[in-house]
Length: 338
Image 1: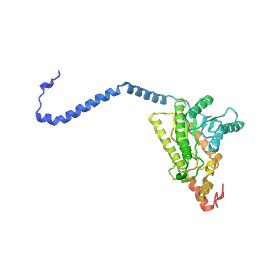
Image 2: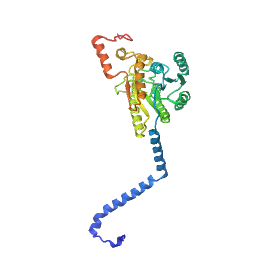
Image 3: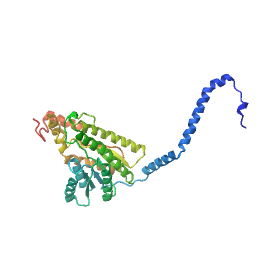
Image 4: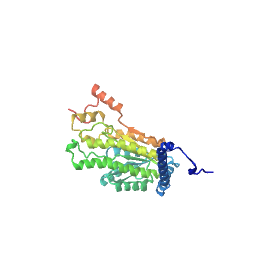
């Protein structure tokens, strides 16, 4: 039997002391009621169902990822991108290459098909700075290969400019930032969206560069800043996938080190630059021959751990610098330093 409130009598002093606690309790109860009502609202129910669906989709049974793999590489008609494409093809994989230049794509595809056959390599024009171009790249890859196991974000630019930031033109800065940062974000977005809809999932590799370790990059400060952001973006995407409990998609970092590409060699105008290029740089073919087996081993082992695949490790760099200083090794290897 409930006791009527009017039947209860408390001393006035007790009521005064209890008043603040009573008001606080009423406030908390009101807030609780509002929270419960909000959580029962259609918006929250819809959001909760959507989140649960995403988690369920991510956690569902996945297809085994076994070689040969389907590979897509941006910025792959020359340099390290092209060398990577060749090594994947040598391993028996199928590859999609792309570039801003339709002519370079056509030439590269023709050359690769002469060596590896028409049913192993395809190419299309794509400007990674344009969202629609990257969406079209995904559609092209799905048309040719149905799915992509390994997506390598290699497209990058320094606008072939080596000068203090104060002297850089607007066009050069826009070229560097939109290609290396905006373009990378767009490619990651589209690659992850595609792979989330693949039962077998997939692996995205973001290529770093000078500045990614936080060290200064004088004469190409903008480039170094964009490459520093690559590492942060990769870590953020890894965290997002973990938060969503995605079990079959992972983003990794790829570090080719110093590669003797046109981009690198065009900046070899100082004695210091020539020294480090001679001591540390390697041809694209040598770097790709090391990187590709290490990249392929990740899906082959079924690993979904974040990985940083490096060609030029700190220990290797210090060893080669010591050999040069102590024994004169690699002196004038690519260019005269004196």
